[in-house]
Image 1: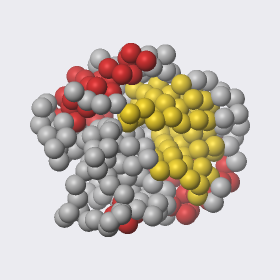
Image 2: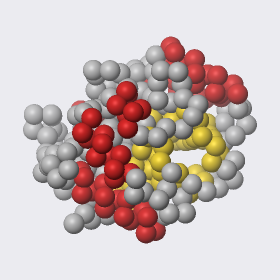
Image 3: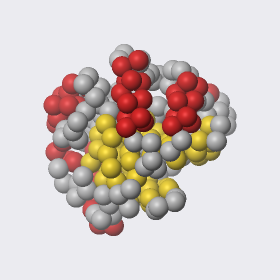
Image 4: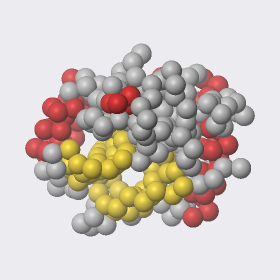
Length: 256
């Protein structure tokens, strides 16, 4: 079972630049590569920050581009997104949580849990009581299927000083809840615009690059006033799910 994974598209108006990058062009290049080499994938997860400004024109541009993707896509909300416009603009799997953009999808004998960590008006993430109740009901509903969890925000700090200020609130509590479930195999998230892997108290995780632009490593340290994108290529993930394994590859691509 193959799952394609894109994050942090930060789409702006067609042809507009963002920190010198062209998100529209880069997303189209990613779609072209996916259609050429990965049209056999079951799903394409889009793990948040789908547009940069949360405006209707950017979502319209996104919808138009995704119409050319030959793989069914699974959209998620990030801190740059607008829930209502996202719901209006893109096709979403059903059933959804009543208010939030979170849902479960079966992929062979694996389950994908896609959670909504958007905290309106803030860069950091949150899972409120309502979202946690939905998660617990889903965990209780299926205690056997090996499960891959997707969020936009990281669960805990990653030794990235600037991005660590914007992690998920109450990450330790969420980690404990997932560990008790017993069938959570891996955690995938975006937001940090860097490839990072490791484990949180035994739970393996993977963070992925951005389709739009890459954040530099903190050597030397930088802040948002001095931020410049790293001179690195964009990439998307290729997740191979077997009966007893989940393997993530990263496919870089060169726009233009």
